[in-house]
Image 1 (cartoon, rainbow, N blue to C red):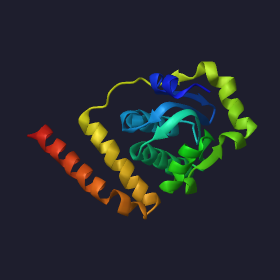
Image 2: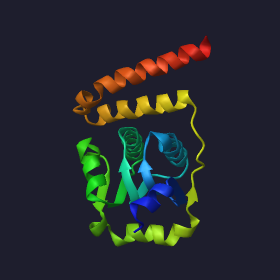
Image 3: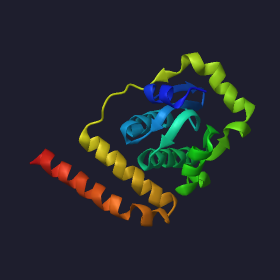
Image 4: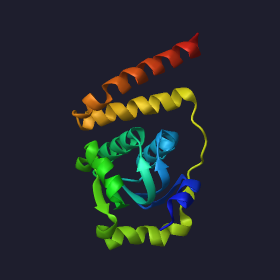
Length: 185
């Protein structure tokens, strides 16, 4: 595995679709900066033949709450289609993050040493065919809406998260409204 400095330099999300399964490889941090890309990819994949998503966390060094909220939304949409999200090669840190926000109830999570061989092999077979999601910067309105939706989803999937995100939700709702007003005015 690459060291943390190499991982920081190679941040991004690599993806492929293999039949009814979307493969996602997170490099660096999953954050609000790439959450819109992840959300859009997941939505597009699920609008087509995909029902399951396998996310390889081997090169992921962390996730913020916005990114985890996007993952929660993705897991909910997969379940609605009869599928699931599985995360493989989690470190103790990234596994702990999932548990902290209750995502371990929605997402099947495997630590690096317990990842099923068939799931790992999906990435070995597809590794050279993974495409990087275009790193286009979302506009402020889209970013704010993604952040708000992600945090609302975290509260929906685990009501205990409301205490953690009450002030964040208020701030984000006000920010989205302000952006809408400035856009229309």
